[in-house]
Image 1 (tube, rainbow over the protein chains, first blue to last red):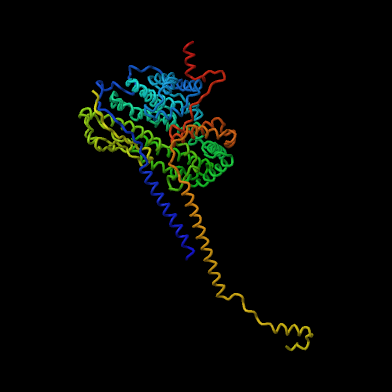
Image 2 (cartoon, one colour):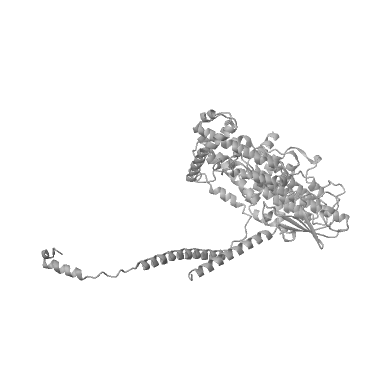
Length: 484
Length: 153
């Protein structure tokens, strides 16, 4: 027994330490900073003409034509500028975008912003075009299409943010709002593209413009942007089209599937399809792993034959008819129909606002690992096509998170309108604001959390359970007296 | 005994010597054997305990020494570019060459990888802005250039 005492002590210490660390990690995760923006704003009512400032190009300022061509031109000009001025450091732009004005090396920033002026001008022209059609033949070519160098939009968004900040510093507030409009138009047009990645870049560009808008409205001369934000399309970026485009890009990669329900494929043809699927979808990289994956796929397919037969019997096929078909055709047909059903079960939820769709989306995502009929495990190896389906739940969340960012800014502007009408006072609750409607949180469908402490209001969108702490957002708002 | 007469003298001598031998005392009694078996089994258990405790102690030390830092969510934009570069056509051998052409395969896999990276890590996962010029120093020709050329003729 004496031998065991040190062992027990070590074990107890380990458990104690592990539980302490786990508790600390939990606490850290909970208290890990929700991104917090401190805003010191001035009361400001609506502009004389409510839609004097807008982030959507007014009809009379639009030009006929397709903006996509000009966006590509803008990217070409980014390439040109980067080639001609190799001393421009993209990482410096990244650092500057989060620095307050008084910490920026203004001369250097002006030089960089000026270098990208031709590209920004192209963005401006593109955003004014009546339409934006990205003519990538995804339906025919799948992902073989040469898609644009999207990193260029990230760089241009940073340039736009810095340009707007310089304009505020120079007292050109209206120009700064126009610069944000260029960014919002770019985001909106990226959102019309057929690729999910393109849409996601649009979401990121718009989120950056929202961050810069929050800086601009701190300036005492800044107009109230409530209606400019409210008049943006909702959602600003609708990703349903690109998600569907990507899910059906399967036919461009594996055209055999188009005729699967009409024609009968021989066992050799089915193996050929699986070989292609293995090459396309397998996350493994070397030949041995590839072959191992293929063998596993085939083995799983063979074990699925019975389920595949049952599936076809339930769909009205006779046993004789099924048994007359090549066995691998039966399995492939089963896998393909599972994929189609998985797509629809998932996509149907993307037609609802996120807060109404999220539970259904979570359930649909479970179908990826569960068979429809017998609830047996069905991993990606068993159905290679499932790999192509985009992460709809996450994509819908990111789009809604952008909607949340815009809605919170609308709340801030509503508070400024209230303060302008009530001697610079903060509303005690959001419900007290009667001047303009206050939007709910698009992530949960409920009003934003709002509380007033002393002379500060805290407006918060908590971190949703399906996201991390960084997905929350908090504004700490103080009101300064209006300059007269 | 009735054959004693037929024994040779040397055999009788051997018989006498053997007869004088007394059985030696057994080196292990039954009780001692049982005791040793019990002790051995306890030692084995002790070794298991000691092994587990030592492993935990090592883990404890390692976890104390190497405290994980906060989760890094931002990733260098170059990451994806490097990641992409590591999957060179020479390393990637997807099934029969005639099944899927290499260019299509590379484009597909690159896109899927980019989509995953952007979903996980955001816009920072995109490759850095390209800096490329044609050998003649001209900008790459785009559809929009073609449009300009066509409209100017």
